[in-house]
Length: 274
Ligand SMILES: NC(=O)c1ccc[n+]([C@@H]2O[C@H](COP(=O)([O-])OP(=O)(O)OC[C@H]3O[C@@H](n4cnc5c(N)ncnc54)[C@H](OP(=O)(O)O)[C@@H]3O)[C@@H](O)[C@H]2O)c1
Image (cartoon, helix red, strand yellow):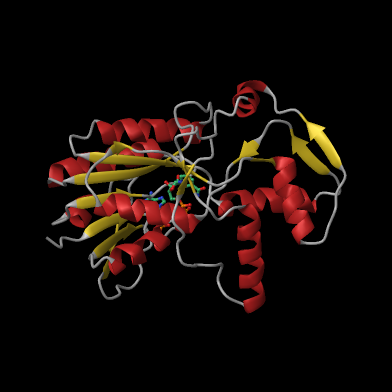
């Protein structure tokens, strides 16, 4: 049955990579967004706001599967509750959520909201799937760029990331969306765990700069959580293959070619290194 798949956040960094994969699989897609764009073949746009709870009933009409990607710095808990309630009311058969690695461990509002969003989906009454993803390279890039602009490289001790390529997260989400409800699945993260010094050094080396390092200590519960690696995936995670250096190279190539930053064929995922 080719009922449309509703993708909230289908206009975002991850969503705009998932939508073509669902289309390539022959599925009709409906995108809910606060800023709907013109429809394209097989892709319908509807206006709605998942935090305000507007437009959801219309967006869900005739939809079996919902991929809930819409998110922001605040309100992801409210947003998921609204989507979960609307999906249940509409008789949806599969509700998927993207969450973040460490959602239940990091003492930061964004992570707490994601943990609450996971709970809302699990208690929605709709068969569900939750994928926790690490930060995308695009998230880490402005951090590295900002630190690289300083005359000294400020390095918060113990702050590590395992950035993952958006294409690889999108490929995993598309597979899960086209599959059966699976509950909480393995996290997805990038191939390498890198501290801030390594991320910035790779960035500055790529751009032909060097900086003296100044270590700083992140204070409080947040600092302790980062030093403990509570934001990092464990050995059961799927690991993408396109790491930080490859991403920087892609960015440079895209910029030189005057193209929007890179969409390339998706590589297969591999299991975490032991
Ligand atoms: N990027 C990462 O590193 C990362 C890592 C793990 C998990 N995630 C999660 O993955 C999801 C997508 O991330 P992303 O990087 O693609 O985000 P993004 O580029 O910032 O895009 C956010 C998307 O959410 C939509 N949106 C935001 N608030 C909305 C609202 N109130 N109502 C309806 N739509 C709303 C936006 O659509 P309009 O602006 O068109 O309305 C846009 O399509 C988020 O839930 C994020 O928390 C991201």
